[in-house]
Amino acid sequence: MRKFDELTERELLALAVASEEEDGRIYADFAHAMRENFPDSAGIFTEMAQEEQEHRRRLIDLYTQRFGEHIPLVRRQDVAGFVLRRSAWQVQRQGIEAMRRHASQMERDAARFYRQAAARSTDVSIRRLLGDLAEAEDAHEQAAGSIALRRLPASKRETEDDQARRRFVLQVVQPGLVGLMDGSVSTLAPVFAAAFATHLPWNAFLVGIAASVGAGISMGFAEALSDDGKLSGRGAPILRGLICGLMTTAGGIGHTLPFLIPRFSEALIVAGIVVVLELALISWIRWRYQDTPLLSAAVQILFGGGLVFAAGVLIGSA
Image (cartoon, rainbow, N blue to C red; front, side, top):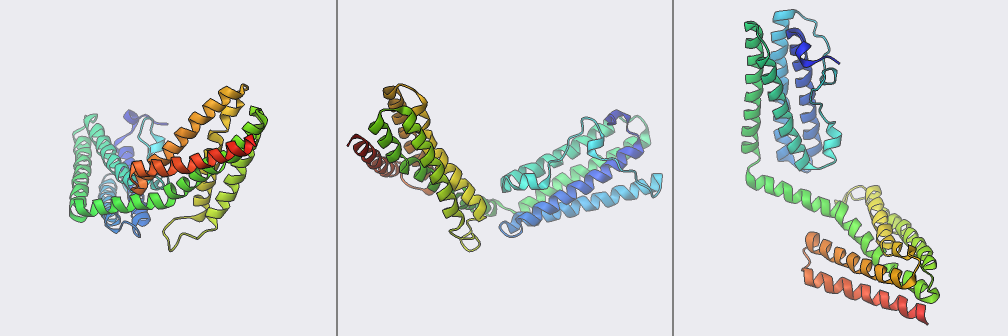
């Protein structure tokens, strides 16, 4: 890899051309990913991509005037210490706010590159060239801000954020919560029935593992086959099924693991504490994401869980 200080004026300009092209394509990818659900933000990224293409055109014009038609391939990854861009698809998976943050960081990184390049130049013509590039990037950053203010005022941004939150609840929280509730509550009876029937923690552990894994597989398939998510907006069925199945298994395993403790009384106490924590977590999630009053959610979950727990104890003690 070349050091930044070793790059010639020709190579710096070639690097700027490649960087502007990459940034423009990232913005275009963001706009494409947002066009259906967040059209206002998609419009912002479309205009930013157009700005990047305009900067690239200006850079190429400057390059051809100074060095001719051939532009060598100099990329960020060829320069030691240069800030590398994350792939657009990696950022897209994290949601709209992550894309906004990434775009802001891209602008800051590009402006820093041009300022540092200009600061280390001693030749007047080189300093003038790099200064023009720095000014162009600063203008782009200001333009991006004005585009955002014009096309995405606070009211529209709040609406898009609310839509993103609802989509997250539908596609992630809801299947995860269904799985966690099923895994935490439905496995209480078999686990504690086995514990009180045998007074052997290992037997209760085996029953709990079997019940948790079986319930996870069952709930995962049930969620994945419930609907394709196109009309309901609940997202990809495979992803929902995976989330639901994993959370179901996790909910059951939580109060199963304490039965690895060899002493029955100690295992029972720890398992009971874990059950209370699990039910409290479910109540909090319902309050946080489903607008259920916290007290109401706690009473409902604790009452239902208590009934299942009591059923397991009574059956195991019979």
